[in-house]
Amino acid sequence: MDSPTTPQPKQNKRWIIVLLFGLVLFVVTNILFFILSIVAGTEQPFDYWWVGIIVALVMAACTWWLTQWLKPASMQQAFTNGIVWAIEIAVLLLMITIPNQTTSAVFGQWSTYLIFVGLAVGPLIYNKKP
Image (cartoon, rainbow, N blue to C red; front, side):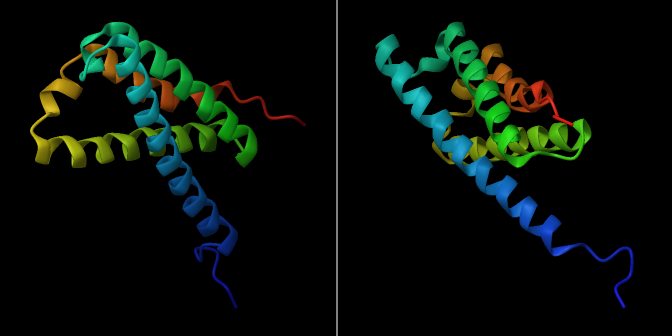
């Protein structure tokens, strides 16, 4: 007989999907950085405050859309997904910037942190339909 503490297979599959969506969000973030570096005409788009704001708004919209698709059971679960996505992208960015010694270029601007706020807050816009 299963004990109440045994995780359900559906819940494990859900977290795998959430983590995979985090990888997709990471790719989208980097594509946005690439496009905005072309628009700004620089190799370091992080130097412009408006880049972080645009990426944060697009990421909030993306996480809202993914939350609509995932249909979390509560707002707490939606916020947890957003926090997981923000942490996942921060860790992946650190894994890239630390070996390249570009951590200060990426994380040295206040607008970069708006991206993580957008990732975490985007799912809170989700309206659970009864």
